[in-house]
Image 1 (cartoon, rainbow, N blue to C red):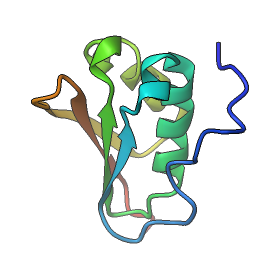
Image 2: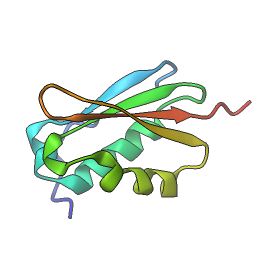
Image 3: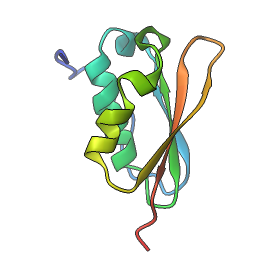
Image 4: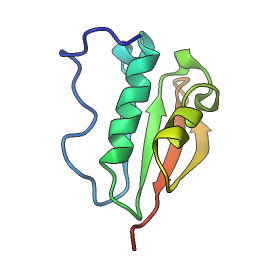
Length: 102
């Protein structure tokens, strides 16, 4: 369960009208899977239609398909989730395409 996260910097502060990456592999993310899921949702919500966000998740949680993808697909309509690669540091990159509203 997510602890008090008042001291955790948000992954986004505005809408992104271009493709971008959200860093969800900081030490605090390694300790809190719920925080990873919450901030991944925030990142997708801040991504404009027609673009994608790369969610870079901490390797301590394992492959994101096992804990993250179902959560995102249950929250959002019109997204396409794909695995990109595992980083050299052990983290994982998931690309989430947000459908254009046109």
